[in-house]
Amino acid sequence: MRMRQSLNQFETAFEQQKVLEQRRRQQLRHRAANRSRQRRVSRSQQQGKVRFSVLAVCLTVTVVAVTVAMFEALTFFMS
Image (cartoon, rainbow, N blue to C red; front, top):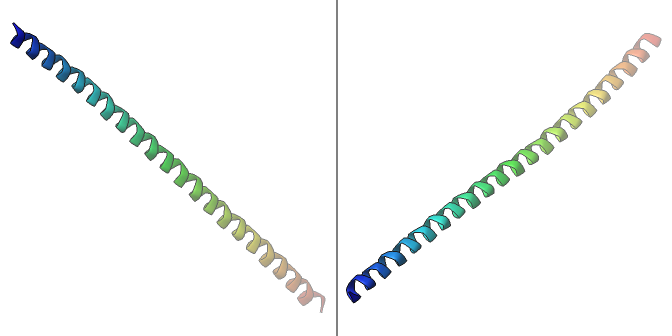
C-alpha cells in the first residue's frame, strides 16, 4: 500500500513538474517573440530615420542646384 502511495505521489509530482516546464517553455517562447518583434520595430524605425535624412539631403541639394542654375542662366541672358 505504501509503495502504491509513494508511486502515486511520484507520478503526481512528475505531472506537476511537466506542467511547470511546459508553462516555462511557453513563456520563454513568448518572451523571445516579443524581443524579436521589438528588434524588428526598432530596426524599421532606424531605417525610416535614415531614409528621411537621405530624402532631406537630396531635396536640399536639388533646391541648391536649381537655384544656382537659375541664377547662372539669368546672368547669362542678362549679359
